[in-house]
Image (cartoon, rainbow, N blue to C red):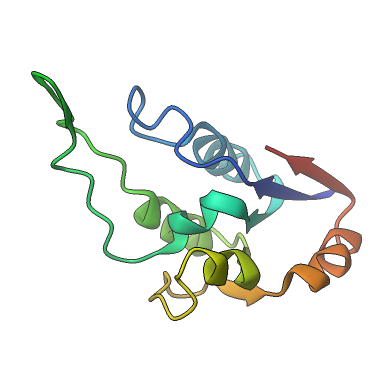
Length: 126
């Protein structure tokens, strides 16, 4: 069974856990031989951008000492054989049309999402 994970909500739990919970779950499931692909849409397209750095994040006296490294997490998924796609239209809406993405991330147009979904047995939207 091949599953397409669609991540639209960005930065879920990244302050508390330093990892997006669904990206972490995808790593764990792929490690258990699950057949998974990933589509980043909405604000989650930011995950595929190279060069992000949240190390200076602070709230009052609290400092983030273990910032998320989401681009590294995405690169790790690609190395494990997970196909990762971003919605081109969502990049453009955020002024990121020409952004440098993690190597191996594919760009698809919003109109092509149904075809991508059809190529999978199940779609899990987060």
